[in-house]
Amino acid sequence: MTPADHDRLRELTAAHVLGALDAADRAELEVHLEVCETCRQDVVDFAPLPALLARLDLAEVAGDSPAVSDAGGLVDAVRADVARIERSRRWWQRSAVAVAVAAAVAVGAVLFVDDGGTPDDPWPGVAMAVEVASSETTAHIVADERDWGTYVHVTAEDLPARDLYAVWTVDRSGRWAPVGSWAPTPDGRAELGCSTALALAEIDRVVITSADRDDELLVAR
Amino acid sequence: MTVPDVDAAVRHLHAAHAPALHAWARHRTTDAREAEEIVQETLIRAWRRRDQYDPARGSERAWLFGIARNVAIDRHRRARHLRTVPADAAPDPIDDTDVGRAVETSHVRDALWALSDAHRAVVVETYYRGRTIAEAAVALQIPEGTVKSRLHHAMRTLRRELERHEVLP
Image (cartoon, rainbow over all chains, first blue to last red; front, side, top):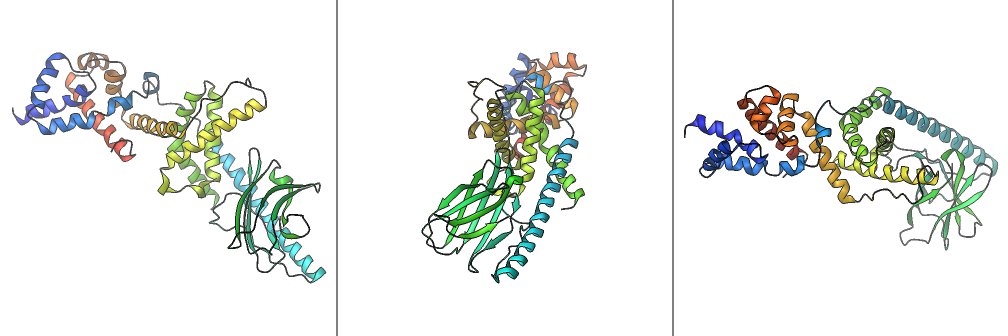
């Protein structure tokens, strides 16, 4: 066995595993495998491949590479999406400032306005501008339009003490609908996901109240 | 993110995964247009939720196939709701095992298509068409020695690619 013989036989290991050798080549390789650890290792390395290749059929691997539409449509769709979110975010921010100023002047109430989304917001969607009744409260509310409506993610801490809390959506025509509720937690922190069939544009505001809707503890727009 | 950044990121997402998602979608539906729409909707959803992708929990490919599964189910439900498909036509169930297998298969497909045409051709002739070395040499009009060496090289490359994507240990 010369090094040239070894190299020639080693090239047969792949064909051997795929069952493509004729009887003479196979017999010669099998004798060699008994004495050559390198070639045996090749066979071991290639052994799992036939089962994986079997997951595809001939039509998928022969001929031209599979045709897939180019990225243009996707780029356009994402651009439109980014523009929509930016428009919406700017609108909420402008509205929130206006509401805060007007309310503070009118009733002397102290309002705390969340400035909206942060770049590392863990929830996708539009961070809503939040007004809270108590200076203790911090809250972050994100609305994400989905195919079926809107997903609203609520995180709130240190709301005024109540027996129960309820989350509502108020649509553009003033209709209230309950979308979630929770009992007070020991650490005063609540995080919940709410869903509504309303599209994002149909939601006028999200409100957190006590269970009986007596008082509004938080309003997000 | 500026517009060019967004475009580049989206084009990367499309180039890296659209062919794999498309091949999977074509297995689920005979309708080419529906397959295209599943891919598009999957990539848009992925884009909107890109902050949720956690590399510690799996590959980008696996994350995308999880989204694609939900897209396929949602689209079927919507179609049923709109009565464009019979009410009793349930989609094939797709569980996590199926998604894991689909991801593996997508890597096998990518690895094969990443081979040069010459190297892929010897795999196709011997494995997929079941030809011997001698028959493949005739079909491809190359010497038998070339078939053997290309096949060895192709299998090495496939093995390495599948290790890189953790399909093989």
